[in-house]
Image (tube, rainbow, N blue to C red; front, side, top):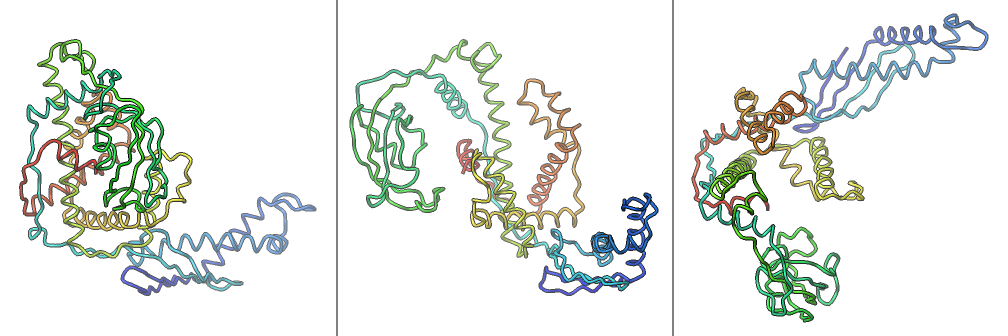
Amino acid sequence: MQVSVESISPIERRMKVTVDAARVNAGLQEGLTRTQRTVRVDGFRPGKVPMSVVRQRFGDSVRQEVVGQLVRDTLLEAISQQELRVAGYPAIDEVNQEGDQALEFVAVFEVYPDVTLADFTSLSVVRPEVSISDADVDEMILNLRKQKATWTTVDRAATLEDRVSLDYEGSINGVPFEGGKAEGQTLVLGSGRMIPGFEEGVVGMTAGEEKTITVTFPEDYQAENLRGKQAQFLIHAKLVEEQHLPELNDEFVREFSEQTDLHAFREEVRGNMERELKAAVRQVVKKAVFDVVVGAHEVSAPKTLVREEIERQRQQAVSRFGWKNIDPRMLPDEMFSVAAERSVNLGLVVGEIIRHHKLEVDQDRLREFVRDIAAAYEDPQQVMDWYLKNNEQRQQLESVVLEDQVVDWLLGSMQVQMQPSTYREILQQIQR
């Protein structure tokens, strides 16, 4: 077998493979013999069809099958022989084989780029410094009380913390826009569910009142066509309700916990918040570190990998937002291309760090990670066993843990600047 490789670009290769005639003819003869043993032809007993008849009637299909298998086999052999790290599956072109001649074909593909790692000691990253305060616990318990709140209709102007029922319709320059209309919308004022200025515009309205407010969509609003646009909303207030919080007593505690007194409940809430904060800080730090890493490397992302990542993110978006009736192909590549290319570039750099520094999954750390996940369930040991004994789940968690180890390695190499933060600020960062 002869192999020649031509570089089309830094990551594109054109490989020509020639398979000698002897190997091709041996494959063809084997294919014809196999067909002769199994084929049924009128006038001949099974297995007794003359080879000339087999060749005449089935030769083309046998040749096509044999040549196809030879292309697949020798392609892998050639890639291994040339020690190429192929990204995606090659495109096969120019397949030529006639009579008893040699087989020739061309494969075009991308390879993983060579990644030259940056000097991480020259890079700096900001790391939040935060702990759970008594005020944070108080606020969390207040939110739990709000979950159990009752509501009564009031005949007064709406204030913050009130619940209102609204009809509204939005327009820009007098033209209604998609998604800007609702009827019977229930909204707790001050919840921050609506764009800035909307809830504030409802404060002071009474049931039956109608008014028009002007607001501006944020520059990072999810609908690109509305970003930064000024809009008018015609609002009709239908109902105003006042909130009544349950008393903070042992009966309330039993609504959320098996604890029997308020002090023990507070400690349980604090423990849950600390676990949540630990995971959130980890997420914020990981993003900050990886943002610095991506910015410090120029990588030629293989288009094949970017296309695969776009498709993965497209499917993920449909699943995350519950768009059951939407064909994922309706979502344009442009929605995901920037994030997909960043993800691929990051993966290439992280992979090179793992290879270059020979990082391996720390099994003790894996068990600790699974233990933290399991702690939120009624039977933690059962959950741990399920994760650790299920190969697919275990491999997914190993990837997460190894990625965390890469982050730790990077933090140990970079210049780290500590920055005071709060529980609320950290949670807001991960919700963006």
